[in-house]
Amino acid sequence: MKTLELRNLAKTYFDPYAGSHVTAVHDVSLDVQQGDFVSVVGPSGCGKTTILNMVAGFIPHSGGEILLNGKAISGPGPERGVVFQSFALFPWKTVLDNVGFGPKMRGVPKAERDRIAHEYLELAGLSHAANRYPNELSGGMQQRVGVVRALANNPEVLLMDEPFASVDAQTRMTLQEELTRIWQERRPTVIFITHDVAEAVFLANRVVVLSKGRVLDEVEVALPRPRVWDDLIEDETFKRLSAHVLHMVRSA
Amino acid sequence: MQRDVSALQPRWLTRGLASAGGAAMFVAPLLALVLIWAIAVPLFDINPRVFPSVAAVAGAAMESIRDGSLIEHIGASLLRVGLGTLIGIVTAVPLGIAMGVSPAVSTFLTPLFRFFSVLAGIAWIPIATLWFGYGFGAIIFVIFNAVFFVVAYNTLLGVSTIPLTLRNAAASLGAGRWALLTEVLLPGALPNIVTGIRTGLGFAWRGLIAAEMIATNVGLGYMLFVARDFYRTEVIILGMIVIGAIWLLIDRLLLVPLERSTIERWGMVRRA
Ligand SMILES: Nc1ncnc2c1ncn2[C@@H]1O[C@H](COP(=O)(O)OP(=O)(O)OP(=O)(O)O)[C@@H](O)[C@H]1O
Ligand SMILES: [Mg+2]
Image (cartoon, rainbow over all chains, first blue to last red; front, side, top):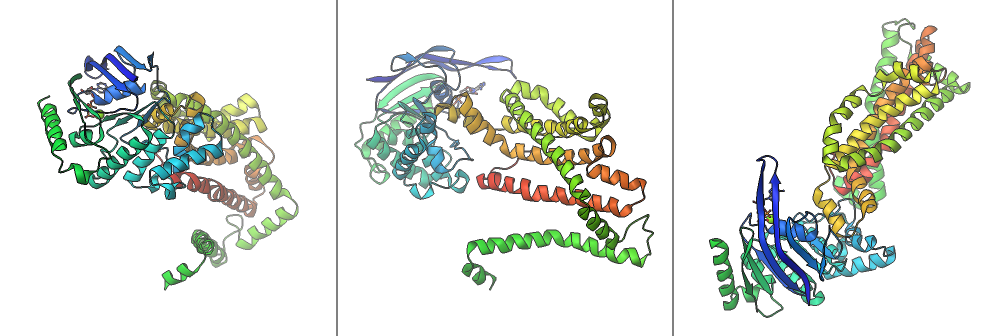
């Protein structure tokens, strides 16, 4: 079943300093099935963040359509959860209250949303940090909170914009493995944006390659799950797919 | 050694000793000043009309406590400053938030608010007495506007520096307008609001003393002003000590803990 459809999506920015228009997204069409995991890769400036911000409803699109379960979206909404590169945790809320924020907005009573938040913190191995404030956590821990905060709200689609770009390489690999594990357990629909080709292939069922605001190609990733780096790093299929995608991105 | 001891002490005791130590460090220079004063006045045989002795001020303190006049002046001043500040905060914070939400509006209003922040307090006394007459109204107005412009300006600044991603995060988690206000904008601007209140209250306290010299017949400012007419330097100095001491108490017992319990705990830096 199709959850999310992008139909000929386009975005033109007005640059007030240059006094001219910049077309960041020309024509992007994409179907995402329910429970699918799609990575979007492309060189810097190809319009990845712009697409995600339009789907999230943070900025309006200038052309085409964004349909969620057949209905056009308008503005941000809880059915589209977002994980930010900068984590975007509320510094004045404890970890527990950050994760419980979505349920709170739905009117879930305190005891119940604390239970939900604890459940998701356990999923991320963060039960011990429930009563801490975000500034007391490492970057990796903060982004784990960012991921489960979005998940705890049961969104139809999870939108992630380079969520692991600002943590160190070892932590990033752990977070990637955790994300595939959580995805297998909960089966959220995910759009994952990155410019790291290996990351895109490691995580996704399908990799969409963007170039200059257009879809260049889509690559199916039929690697078995669960996926762990120790296995995949030597895997021939993984290496071949990664090389193929990398080649496309570099020539894009 | 130091370490071993603190490891054995319960936490509240360690913390209690630390804050007692902090208080001692804070009081010591003040006591040193009193000591110098106690020595200097008899040493140089200073005329009490120029500067009173410690004993004379202590006597004035005892007397004014006994006859109830000191409490009456303090009460009147605190009531005015409390009321004016409350009205100032309650009006300035919502206005500051409403204005801070729109970058265009906040850019437009920032110079105005800076202008009025500088004028806050004392400069308004003459016009306030023309508008409200001599008395309660004029004084409350002076305090109100000392607090209002500074708090509104800082709130506006605080809201406009909240990262857009935090607002987006809240919206994508289902926050509506009201939740955005109470869950994001207000706590996000709190570091600046507290800074604004601290600065504004400082202006208000000085404005109050000045206004009370002109526009009323009770209060600490009035107490100083009347004592001057009778050359009672010991009452003037007593009043000055009380004014300074009350401000230090308000700041350290009210404002500093407020900052600690929120901003420092959250790891937020004030962006003044
Ligand atoms: N607010 C804006 N105003 C004007 N131009 C913009 C704006 N945001 C993005 N652009 C332009 O649109 C293009 C696409 O930007 P976008 O941020 O979507 O790229 P990206 O693929 O996410 O890049 P990166 O990998 O570096 O994050 C770029 O040329 C950028 O300069
Ligand atoms: Mg980007």
